[in-house]
Amino acid sequence: MKYKSLPSSKAESWYFFQNFKMKLYNTNVTTGMELEATNGKMLPALTVFSESLRYLKQHALDTIKEASFQTVYDEEEITWVITVPAIWSSAAKQFMRLAAKEAGMISGMLSKNLIIALEPEAASLWCKQLPQEGFMADSSDKKKFEDSPGIQYVVVDCGGGTIDITVHEIQENHYLKELHKATGGGWGGNRVDENFTYFLREIFSDGVWDEYVKSHPTELQHMMYNFGLQKCSASREAVYIHCYYNLIRVAERKKDIAQFFEKAHGAVWCDGMVMITYEKMKSLFDYSIKNIICTLREILDKPGMAKVQYILLVGGFASSIILRDAISQAFSKKYHVLCPVEAQAAVAKGAVLFGVNPHLVTSRISAKTYGLKVGQEFDPAIHDVSKRRVSKIGDYAYCTDLFKKLVGIGESVNINEAAQYDFYPTEADQTNAHFVFYCTEKQDAQYVDEEGIEQLGSCIVPMPERCLGMQQQLKMEIKFGLTEFKATCTDVASKESQTVIIDFLTV
Image (tube, rainbow, N blue to C red; front, side):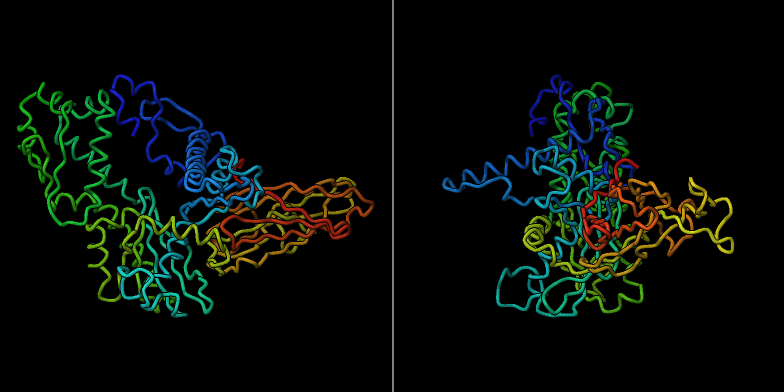
């Protein structure tokens, strides 16, 4: 809002970041990565994310203060819930935790005062307590989803950046069980905005559009903001976009503005407004809709999905009638397609429920096969000779780079279940153990350097110096069912345990 109110001459001295959350998707996320502002200047991504969170934190605390003048609380009493797309990588989720720490929300990376919630899950928690036959009636005596154990539904969380799809089943105790790993992609509402700007570039040819974008960035923001409101409208009719003064001025230096529209398909110049036909408007959604429908079909055609009855649409982009019509047309013969009244608020409201009780989701499906890099006594019958190593003293030959599978792709993992691995040192004088985690789309692997296996993260565990030498034993426990992996390491002899941070950001 501040950026839109600036004169274009002043805009140059500000850093304005748009849709920057998408920069954490489908990319190698690192602590030092940078983001480009609209004026081409760069800033560390961590600064942009942490400042955003700092602002939200302050806003929340001020609101509490204003609303209840007598409430005195300690910041340590607050649990913050940050929602992220389920299809984000472990590194992206950890990056958000780091940004929260930088913003002063939590004091350390292991703090229990921050919960990372997955957006489609949060939405699902909200939707399951809504009436089954539709989402108009709120908290009425109508039968709710959660009152029917065994009911299965797909949640399609339609955001600006990503579309996040997950499948849930209601359990006896109102809890949720995930039936299919989180799927989706970068097909959110921002794609419609991009297609709209491509369309305007076609209309305002001869470099007019490019000059306008460069010279009047804040006015362009106004125009895009108005388009955003129209995009999510609930009416099936043509859309009118106000054409701003500077765009008209730049265009009319070339020729009369009406002439730009002579060859335009689906747009008409109309007394200072650009009228876009409903058909043209629909075409701007094609990319997003095609990907959503195709992915939904792929999921629903799988054998384990035969009992699914409902498709629930949530997120801000779901309020668009064009999107809802397309999904209803594709699926309403076989499924009930529903969209709650406050589609955009479903994620935020569900995140509150999740923060109060993170155990509401009892199990999740593993998105990949996860494993550890280990060494084992060398066996010439099964091990590759190039992987043979000998300990410093020379009394022990072992095979290095072995992939020890901890959880398989597509496996259902309970959130309280821990995968265990017993570790013995390869050197008698070892003072710490370096655990390196890998993941793959394959069911299993023998070595960590095979094709299709990527390094995920690592952690270092100190080993108490003792005379046990090679007999010293460490027990590693990892919980894969959580929104963030949690590792605990125990020294068997001393029974000392410690929670270990798996670092996904320095890979």
